[in-house]
Image (tube, rainbow, N blue to C red; front, side):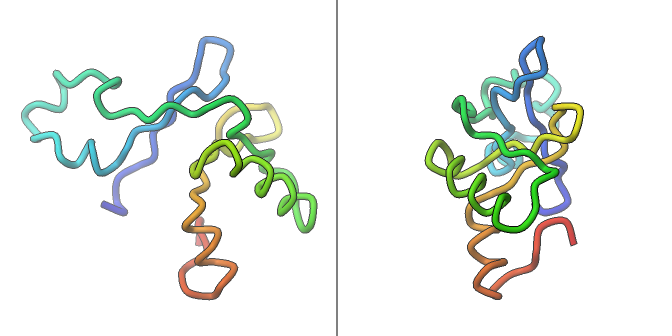
Length: 105
């Protein structure tokens, strides 16, 4: 499942509104994927479940901690406000504890 790309749905103004649940997508038979509506495999992202990807150090940690109050999955925004990735709570915990790989490496 790690080879599946992350998919984030955005509103017309570019605001992230949901992401594709990779497990739900993987459960859809290949021959049915083209006919499966996105809403069948999307998890809504609540307002506030975003973090500025340009932050670093303590500022990044504070922003991520605050945003994780809204969701266990966050949309990461680039300098232009466009979504550049997803950040999962479990990945952050694993990276900080030394148990897992750092996302993006």
